[in-house]
Length: 67
Image 1 (cartoon, rainbow, N blue to C red):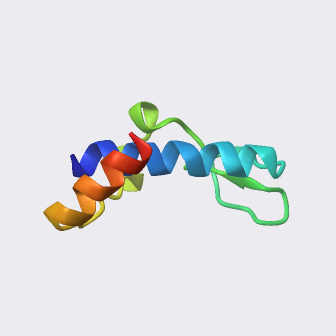
Image 2 (cartoon, helix red, strand yellow):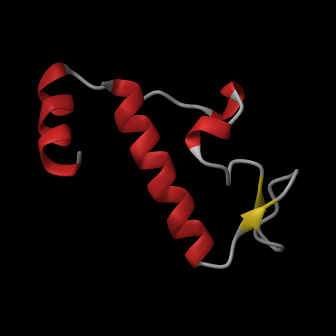
C-alpha cells in the first residue's frame, strides 16, 4: 500500500513538473529545469524512490480518496 501511494504521488509530481516546463536530465538544475527524478516510478532508480511512512488509517484514507 505504501509503495502504491508513493508511486501515485511521484507520478503526479512528475506531471506537475512537466507542465511547469521541467524535463528529464542527468543532473538536478533549477535554472535549466532538469531533474533525474523526472521519470515514471517504474523507471526510477531505487536511490530516488522514497516510500512514504504512513500509518494504516492514513493509508486507507488516502486510497479511498485517490486510488
